Length: 480
Image 1 (cartoon, rainbow, N blue to C red):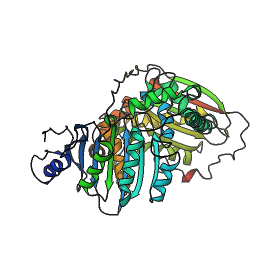
Image 2 (cartoon, rainbow, N blue to C red):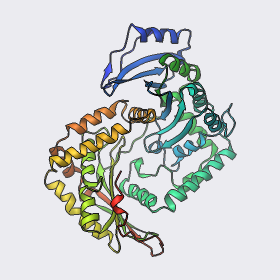
Image 3 (cartoon, rainbow, N blue to C red):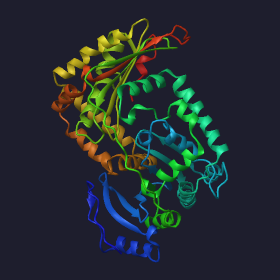
Image 4 (cartoon, rainbow, N blue to C red):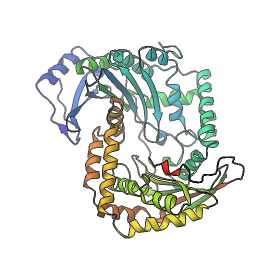
């Protein structure tokens, strides 16, 4: 067997040249064609006690396995390195369209049978698409792994794309856009915020796509996209749960080993130029009160500044004791909802802030009340007690997300796809723990810059019959 070197992954152990794992690979690769031969790339520490074994097939499929026998269940996820950022002008939304098409007919599975077969086996399945990625996940009893591998491999390589099915799914997606964007205030405002904030980078167009693009897709467009991006060398297969490592790998070889890699095009990333002046837009919507969406520039997920900025957001917006909630909702009583989120993307993105007014207060009043709170964290460090609470809240949230096999699989697949490190979550935990009040002061001054922000004002059109947001329920609402 050809010896390979491990990727440069934090926590990766030296590759075994002898021993049980090496012997297992020799046996698994015996008489296999080159595309189906496995190599072991790394053993990666996933927390203090767990390990992710990282393999690759000869066709480029990455395989990440975490054996967790705590319950007789398995989560299988397939992460593709394609999202809305990989589309081109005039073809936006095709990555999301494929999330729908992939549940259709394949060469050996009739339309509707994919879901039915998995449900009959006790499994549940779903999918998601975003800016940097698309993934498909299935939670299943351990004895349904072979069936799931067969079905997933089948739709990766032998999806049937015909005009009636494509047209039908286009209409489903068009209706989804109407419900989630065109007829939804928050969805429409979020879309407009990113459109105004990004003038060059593909993060400026929505994952669901522009309506004219959705309606204009042809079956030929879909076939080209599928043959390009839905290939083993653009995918990471994540298996977490009560599995025998050799049996899981043998199943991967059996079902994926004959698939040919594709030629993945080099992504033509258009970096977003520096923003040197505030951008503003105003929209009239059927809402009971004024709203404001603000986008400050934010670092990429892998940037050193990302963790401190996330901690600062926790102090400003997370929960009823956060600075902004306490000031705008409880004390001044001019807002009914406040929230913030730092984008977790491969490239620099936005720090989203959303404020919803109470009663007759305006968006300008919300901005005027917010500015002193932001100026305070730019002017002086937060307290050590605030930072300690923020660290504890984030760490608790992260660890709670790892309680299930699905939670572990999602973190492994996400960080493998976005950062190339399946255990990067734990490096982020370490980064949170290392952050100082000085780090938060630095990122506040660097990113909370009014001349580099985008602001969307939402004006009520007077037609909404929603109950006035008088703050009755505001105390129970927390930013996620």
